[in-house]
Length: 582
Image (cartoon, rainbow, N blue to C red; front, side, top):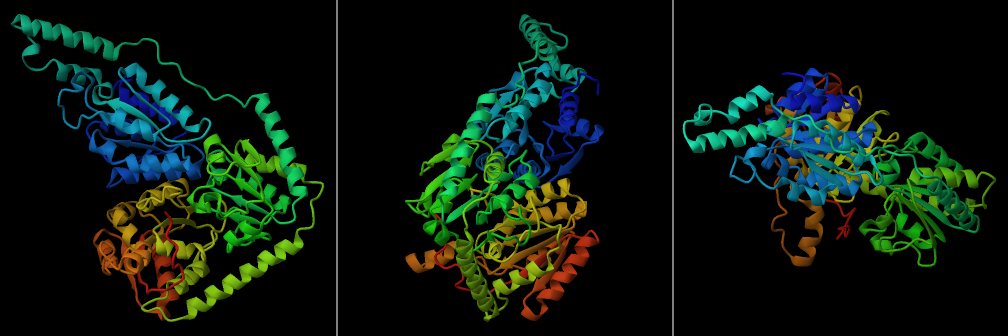
């Protein structure tokens, strides 16, 4: 490849942006990007489904501080990423997707895998562009990174036609093959002239597109944040029963977890952490609560929503006391006022807002100890109830007892990946992430199938860390083939599938309300045998007496470089009855 090769220009820009891993499923349209990126020292992580590649880039964006990147081939390669793109958009995750495309000369002429990709992708990304010349590639990729990070973070897309990526000599040979090489007729000469003109445009130098560069926040924005923090501090000084709810956005790309955790501790407000914020304060922290959140919000007289919109997770704002003073901080103005407009609302990074708020309450706040004791009493009662339910028989294995064992076995530096419905939601009541940015779930879109990509993204960001993944047996179907990828890369993975043989979260209400289990029954497949055939290790868990030893065996194998799937046959409980979200 020469220096002017489009694939090299893309790879050079990725290297300039600090990209260390590129997730992909190979395709002829994008081969020059992959080869050049590998030559630049970027790790190429090849997977079995393009959605996995995009989910992996999403996880890197959340954990690594720089936008993750995926490259996929044209047509079905791009279409397979749409769910992952929308998941990232709703989660405000700033990934960059590079998509192959048919040659510029063949657009709209029935070429292999040629569709209107821009029309398909644009609704699901912040910004999209199609390179039409080699000179467009690097500026477009640089612009994609800028746009992904700016304002409310989100995914971006760059379409890279095959003829702007390959070497010029190769493209010329391809364009001018056949009768066009030695034109004999007027039609041949006209075609030769047309193709030569197109090639000149394709490889011309010329002025690159303008690139948006990040700018510091204007002074007016800082003044507004300061004023709103003053008002919020005054409201909290009048509060007797405040609650702080911290959502995923507070840990979005660019956030400072240590400063945020320190601010929350200094505020002294009873706090509930959700989504990516789980683990921010460690496994256990004074004033951190996990249970009876709805009851606390309904009794609170002041509620601070830091990156947590009033969507279905808060029953569209109805979980919050109607008389409570609501204080909100969100990067998105639309999310800030969704369903319930806050009395004090800051369009700002939630972590920055909480740091500013903590500075203003440094002089002290009202005595909230009685309120904290009331919440702690409810917390203890719920924990006792879980202990009682975990001790009840639910053969073959009680899912709550299994989750308690996972909580005991989980190492302090583990990253937890959650992909499933009922089993994963049950685990969220019991399993406690150990530190900031150690919990990965899909977010507001509730997407099943994120597991494999999130595992690979976590491994790329933290290669020396054990990764624990909790799967529902329905969700595992999306990721099963990637155990071959995990085995090839020796990912230190302990995956546990809660196998109850059905889509339990749907079956709970469907069977009761509609008296039918249609579409919800799966049967207890032998997933442990399936992963053995893919190069991983499979362990069957069907005896509660063997829970601890099975998890210990899984950890030992994972530490030795063999990814493990524990196929845990779990029984039915009424723990989450009536929990469906619509």
